[in-house]
Image 1: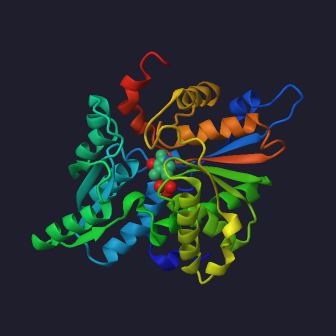
Image 2 (image 1 turned 180 degrees about the vertical axis):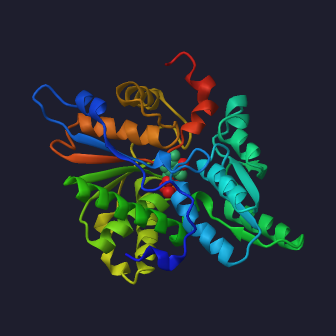
Image 3 (image 1 turned 180 degrees about the horizontal axis):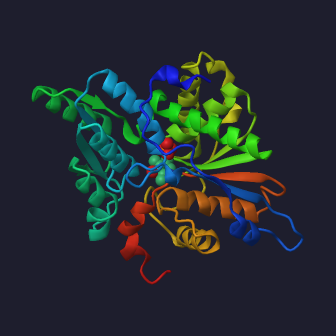
Length: 338
Ligand SMILES: *Cc1c(COP(=O)(O)O)cnc(C)c1O
């Protein structure tokens, strides 16, 4: 797969580490020795002001923005968006302005949720942000702010929520190639990849990359927001579009897209006891810091499914998509439960 054809700009720390998870593997091994062997792909270590999965997407999106001679990045996300923080960081590197629209999606009034974590970092990185009510039409908001930038003589480049269009998803097609290459070098056979799936670019990019290269490794997305039918339809559409950039849309088939959306709990960004337990489990077994909104929910799902015997005998790779900066926004909510 010829990624340089798409002119990404390079600032991520790649390849990210690919490591075993001995502590959690031991915890999920039953008395008769059955259970999965767990590995972790450390995309929390992509290096862009705290890193995370949006960094790979932004290499391609920034390449496109610079080719269009943009001077202002415009994007949106939930108040504690990791995508917004990484976009603000990419803008800082290239001397671009950054206009952010934050959606009060969770309805939280907590001071730490609204001021700490990623919001603090957005401000530190020099982005300008405004907040709109939960449930707002965020694409309309993006168009409105882009028009404002243009009216003031600027050259806006709009990045959709999560950086999830086909250009951004190329970053995860590339991650699929990187991961398979690492496994090949180690002589390791991967049976399954598990990732959190939200705005769909990560999941879709992985599926597209694996399908185009013919790797035949199933990907399980654990949903954090939408119901299963909606999530799978979004991922499928974007995976086909991404594979289409290589001229191979037909290699992505509907059966390759699987999302389990049974672990969302009360809603996007809302945590429960099982999420906190998942955060604690892997912090204490392997010193890995997950986040409350995405990876903590994915790990809640992984642990429940592993305990139910779903991955017995498999080598399972958990994609750590980052987000630990958001932990500080949930301090008051986790108080007394650690
Ligand atoms: C955005 C995000 C995800 C979800 O990735 P999508 O490409 O939006 O599906 C997962 N984990 C973290 C930490 C994120 O910030």
